Amino acid sequence: MSKIRIALIEDHDLTRVGIRTALSQKEEIEVVGEATNAVEGLKMLRMLQPDIAIVDIGLPDKDGIELTRELKSTPNGEDLSTKVLILTLRDNKEAVLAAFAAGADSYCMKDIKFDNLLEAVRVTYNGNAWIDPAIARIVLQQAQQNPRSPETTLADNKNLSQNPDFLDNQEITDPYTLTERELEVLQLIVEGCSNALIAERLYITVGTVKTHVRNILNKLCADDRTQAAVRALRSGLVG
Image (tube, rainbow, N blue to C red; front, top):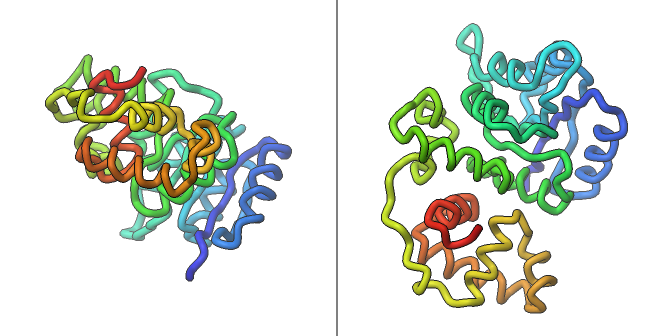
């Protein structure tokens, strides 16, 4: 089994070392490089071509959004498949939309728990967008306000194009199709909880959680947890 190759671009030493140490404890992950600014980071990414770049939005020379834009521009016809996971303390609408418009694949708050960061890495590696619940609300709010504006609803963003439920009008999901327990599980999914954490909070086994998650995805016609969370928020199933 091939490892998930990750590069870190973060100027705060303690944060960078903490993320590296935590990720390195997982056998499936290999941290292949680190940088403390955007210029060095971009050179590193183009040289190493990791699977995922975890990028701080607030770098000292230029922000992570600009770095993402430059990385995704693929100069000289170069085909870089590196996915970008933005890590930030900023949850304002402008930063969120700018990051996705630049080509970011996933967006996490810096105070994310490690289990959730690990899940974000796995989801991003598998080609899906992982969006912090607070961020999902912002994207949904913007999509609802401007349902046909590609500049503000990210309709042109290739990384979210596989998740049309962010943008397309949908029928409101009937809450009565989900059981009370499934709604509880769905609420925790929206909050970014892993299966293990959901099991702990609801005093059930991880296997039972997986069954509930599978049922929820089927009932919401969602391909993954992110889509389920977005549809739940959009339809008002959870708050």
